[in-house]
Image (tube, rainbow, N blue to C red):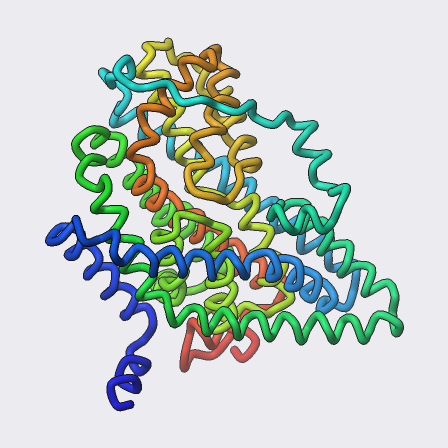
Length: 420
């Protein structure tokens, strides 16, 4: 019992970082043994993903009912989408800028890569129509996030409009949301074991190969991800959210580590919601609507990578880089990032939508995907971190604008603006 009490007395983020370091050591010291611990990582990811669909459905609906006034919904949603559009466009620009400076695509041996079959990217019409599901239960079973968000919004608005008759259902939603977040807290205690296994297997499988075969691309991904967080997100936090930047990133470190280890914005959502309330001080009506929406459209890491990889491909194929090409990559890259599923390596298969706009045929795009895909796991883990950071940055900023941010969480012992 003393050992258990000592374990739980250590802050979770320290346990997670320690597990990450042990996973790296284990992978390098005994790589052939990593399959024996893979089950811990798989169980952890399955447990997290098990919670995603019910959390999105219940927390968005309960968050809307918590707003009380239907007029607040439009303002909250508009500010959230507008901020995500800004960070996404800046992320594509950063990816393109980093690729232009480092030029990782020059001399890349794409001719040796095995073409990777690409599915047809969804058209804007298909993306728009798909928001409204023909079968709610089918959307829930498939984890179709945009459709689930649409249903949750309707459910919340319907509950508000129903007035007194909707109050029992509103109470049920609030109760279910609280229960789900408690379950997240229970699952989070397994994070160190899941991270240990996930990191060990990822590094043992192809960690060294990433830096040998696509080293410049890996370096560009790291620089681009760091620039998006340290420049774009930090400036938003400092000047729009008006919170201490260093304290903010320390408060969300659990979510960032889970994002890195799972390489999935969707799988990170339950953890992000927990740290938003417990560590950052975002009120439930705000984080329960902005964070699930951000898991679907707020993918700064994907946007940065789409811009970076597009430039990588154009450099590898020797395509002239004119102002028109830059503009097309920026526009289509931002739109493609908005439509990318929040699952590992999904951005690779949205690349065709961007490159086709600048005249690269699908068969050449397949060569790029075939070249990068064997090494994409660690690259994907890296670029998921700025997506998680963007989600919590936008949620914090919107909470500030809505007056739903508890400043004492990030400014302990200091008077708030209302107290001055």
